[in-house]
Length: 270
Image (tube, rainbow, N blue to C red; front, side, top):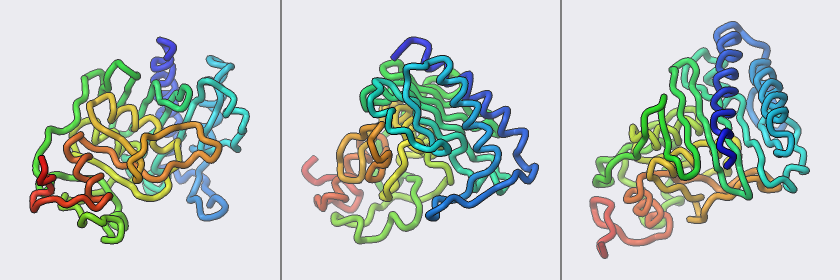
């Protein structure tokens, strides 16, 4: 990772926040995307335009992948690529809620090397550099300490709890929810929640920055099949995400694979 990639992401995540504040609760113009891909607002597009112009001006040899830009597969030939969600949690933004975020990452040869998740209305700036740890507003982050599964809290939408998803038995954690995937991952890195999961296909721009934040805070992140995440794919989606402190992560993957666990969610072989 070039030494100043993270600083570059921080600067323009904060600029994205300034733009978002201009539109927030000001009834921005909005549209529905084709094929049921959700809403988009003039704020999303304004932030995307700003990010693309400034980040690529600073790094003209990098590729570009954003939720709000028509995909250019020329990015596949690039060693490094920006992976950006101008506003993650657009529905929350439209509703005037504070939990939307800006998610910016640099990916090098499929691996996230710098990531920022910024929540401007909450003044929370989550950052991570590969090999340099993760921080919230400059303070080092660490994932939650291990505990029995029945005492853990996991961020997940209700459909993820369907029994068919868990051959080893439905997990015993307490489920809660936040609308932004990037924010959910950042909260796991912060240690405020023990884990997060989504078993649906997930867009890279929603999870790239958060993946590095969790990993650099000492957590584990795999897809729903137990494979490591790789980014800058031709079709920029991955088969779900399970992110958690290592002990809980192992138990969740065991439940996914049908491995027997005891009443506390522990592997009886341990």
